[in-house]
Length: 114
Image (cartoon, rainbow, N blue to C red; front, side, top):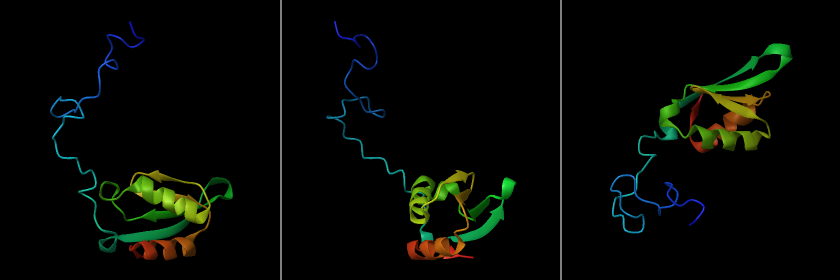
């Protein structure tokens, strides 16, 4: 008797839609990015805000979270600036004053910038 015998992890992986084995499944692959809007049809608004204890944050707003791949965009911008950051609802926050650099990068990606 195996370690996972009798648990859901004991059986081979099955398709969630048709419940066949994944190797036998004929379901079309799901496209999670079908509702994304092209960057050239969106306008990003940039601002620099001063937070508690004098910390400066560059805020990117005006982009809808459900129409963008926020985690990938945030990772790309953080690595470009060499700084930390987070997404807070429909805004992206990059630590530090990176207004000029982010304007150039977002234009390079294809976003309209204000």
